[in-house]
Amino acid sequence: MSNAPIRILLADDHELVRTGFSIILGAQSDFEVVGEARNGREAVERAAELRPDVICMDIQMPEVDGIEATRMIVAEPDSTAAILILTTFDNEEQLFDALDAGASGFLLKNSSPDELADAVRTLASGDALLSPAVTRRVLQRLARDKNELPLQTEATVPTELTPREHEVLVLVSEGLSNAEIAGALFLGEATVKTHVSKVLQKLNLRDRIQAIVYAYEHGVVVPKARTDRPA
Image (tube, helix red, strand yellow):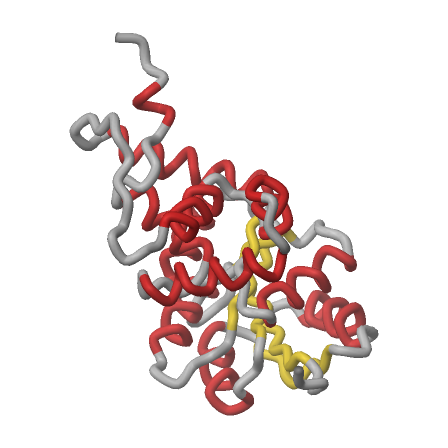
């Protein structure tokens, strides 16, 4: 495993916020803050120039906002940066716009320094991050969207997946972490991580967030909003 530090780009239009995040993250021995951006346009330019591992992205910025900047960065064929959306606004529409744009995580700015550092490490490892509260919102939104489609009472199984991989996908779609899946299936956490990686690869998905969306859109799980409804 590489011992190279996790390279971080900070994008926020408030200098004080950037300075605070830089101090918090720079204090971690495995982090390196390689640059800052004052707006979305600069974030796109600096991402191409510096090729960071993780970008901490504000949403509301001048010239180009954080959501559009995320979309532009993710669209670059050689982009490998994971984008962590940091905002003071606990806004559902912004959440889904950010996820649709390709963000891999969503964290409120009032989170603790330890939560911020853990989020950066999670994204740098190739995983996605949503707080339990945000995960519930994603599931509820997907359930509402699915509720508008014709009633489906039985879940489907993607033919590309093995039975075990299907089980893992179902549990991922319920918002469980690798550790929780390992406990549910009596597997090692490393084994679960391998199964998750294979699921993402076989279904051509970027991360766990896309896996949740896939599971609901393709009927791998049946939303309770429909199945629990009285006849």
